[in-house]
Length: 311
Ligand SMILES: [Mg+2]
Image 1 (cartoon, helix red, strand yellow):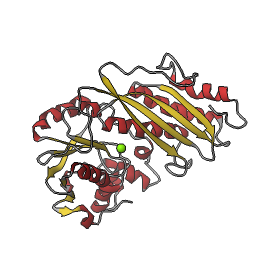
Image 2 (cartoon, helix red, strand yellow):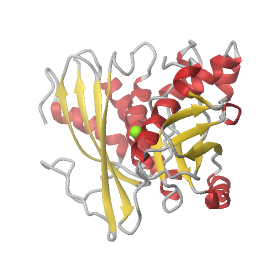
Image 3 (cartoon, rainbow, N blue to C red):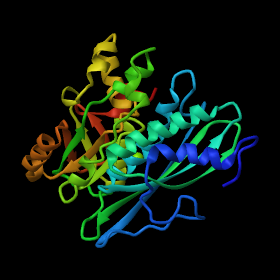
Image 4 (cartoon, rainbow, N blue to C red):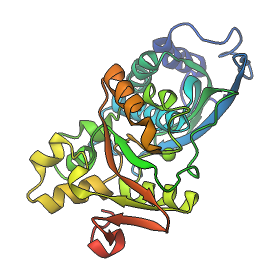
């Protein structure tokens, strides 16, 4: 750990780690590195993503708790998109001098609350001085060695296209002073992702917008996806905030930051998916189908030609 300027390094680390309670590892934090067991019969799934002040958030619109929550949430969403269950995570912080210790602890509190919900904890990290507040999480997950991870390239003609939860609420929040909670505090699909193993043929989390993310999935799978506009589960915030139907649809398609899962599955999986949705009390909506060809289609037209654009 590099000591932040004019701060007591050890007091700072102690204050930051306290909200997380007992460390999951028998060794570290406090040692040079964490030492972790990979659960027997599993493979490790690892991802990393940074949340940077004035790039991904501003202090005017995010509480410090929100920063901690979101930094972890976006990583857990990527873990879930692979069909993995979260195991633990590391956190590297860059800290400007004008962030008070109490504000740093608020970051930790927001992060720890989500970690507890996901049943995981912090196992290591780093603090350094920097010009902006930046929180980089490395999240670890596990997946049974016998299971095929949910990659982007497995969609096949004849599969259905599904999305979990609702779309457009985060974008609707961005367009208004309030509510912004969907954008500040996404709820990653930590339980749904692993439940889709063996059912979904391809999966991606919706971070950049449904159209863009499903575009990646279609390209990786070398197929075309035909979506039906009326079937898209537009969120209640997006519906309420939109001044027109096309605006709500635009948020749902291109707004991004919904952190739900978009995936494909064979028709025969429909009943099992409905059972999973009921069991997890999560909405899963069929929004289209996979056909041979390339690209993303909406109501029979190539999506690029429909005028929907990334914000
Ligand atoms: Mg992703």
